[in-house]
Length: 321
Image (cartoon, rainbow, N blue to C red; front, side):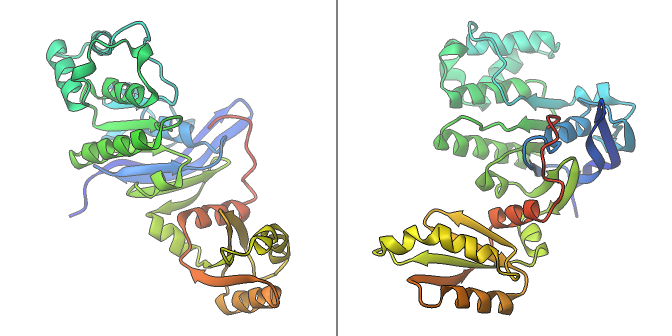
């Protein structure tokens, strides 16, 4: 049996002045799901998430979050949401424990001392409880910020680019924690620019200029674009051929069968929808060169590059992310 819907909305719109930042958003998110929002800066990711979680009231539309009306019950929704901002916003001159205790007081958390002690243990912060927040590394600040969001036992967690500026190990540890929370039934909405993090989400939404371009699992989004992808590379010992790749990229973009050309390290990924025509065109351009080609499965990054190239809506709107 499918998990119950935590979010079920349609036709959500939001304006900031003359800018139409989110346009007719429709979305469903189930309990315990890790749902990722992707898109360029200014695409409406953060505004969309804030509307879904009661932190912004939509201008129009309908639907429910946690069984409450997103237009009328935003205050009640907010009390059941944990929100982690992109920038660390706690107090540097307070210890980890003092920060959590202060936040628990602000939000009138029941059994405050027990809630702080429990959260310190669950997030692995107990041994550092007396360390000043300002002396923490980026990864530990991130963990403290997450702890502050969980004090009141939210049913829904909003994470706005939570791993920006932290090292790879801290990112991996953080995502292990997110999956633990998901397994416990907490629904997580997360915006990210990292493709490897997007692949850790159960489902994804890709927004551009406030419109939803694609939604589904990573596999569904990739399959829905019907891409055929070839990798173009030089032999490892052929430095001259490697340096020629940028020139070949320009030639490949001129082929009518090519939808996308993107650099991936020392290779090019070339994608198109007509497999046979694409293969024939690539073979003709590469004939007589020292470059080689092989078919590869299209990646999530290939899919999103194609989405942006195929959309007239990709220009940033001057804010309102």
